[in-house]
Length: 310
Ligand SMILES: Nc1ncnc2c1ncn2[C@@H]1O[C@H](COP(=O)(O)OP(=O)(O)OP(=O)(O)O)[C@@H](O)[C@H]1O
Image (cartoon, rainbow, N blue to C red; front, side, top):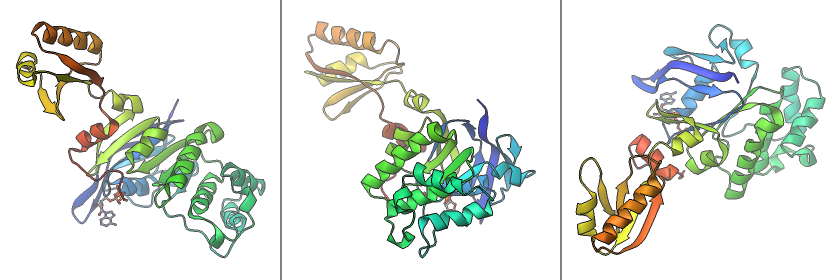
């Protein structure tokens, strides 16, 4: 598998502030690559750099091995893009809107029917866009991005403004794209749950810097699980189990212990249970609790943003 997008030391400064600050991305071909970050993290700026709409102050970008600065047209030939608010001609039909792009790209007419069917808009192709729902408009935006069979699809916050049903439809649709079209998908979002459910890989950006990049399961495995204990004598249990580097916290009426690794967590839990019982402490709750993605994300960005809220 090749690399669809590679950036090295990408930097973009606006009025003395680095909106994108030394970003190294490596997007594997065939991935659904989630680009996650809170509002203002630098996602849109990065996407505009990837599309050559902005010039970086530093760094380089290559798309399928083509250097963007040296071979702009060749690099971008394989890219389809949809922005968060798709712009269409309201007084034209869905089909007519797509036909404008098709002509610009000098594509075969048959491609319009193909993309309309992929986004399930064939039945309303002859309807004026002003009569489309927001979800349909978004799907028409995706259809336009699919014209020319691009090898890389870039979607900037594709579910913004959609209702929960629309969000799910869009997410389910994006998930099927690599299998249906063979394309790599790069999708930005500030909704953790959305990225969690659709991406194979993820990069987390915060204040212009990448704070995590890797496969989704690597993100989940970033921290060893914790052990939650409910027992009859928190103070004694805490004194017995604490010490050394191990942290014992009391949270919601439970003791929480950070384990050193995921391996052997069960044996560790059993040993702790035995130890407490032997000391005459009753254990009524014992659970190995993995970190939720939300906790990991909050830790990565070292803050408590209103994640998942507009
Ligand atoms: N043209 C510009 N001029 C000045 N500052 C800008 C410009 N574009 C972006 N910024 C600033 O750069 C930072 C990153 O913005 P960017 O739009 O890339 O973030 P984002 O992650 O896409 O956020 P959102 O989810 O809100 O769109 C912000 O602080 C923003 O105010």
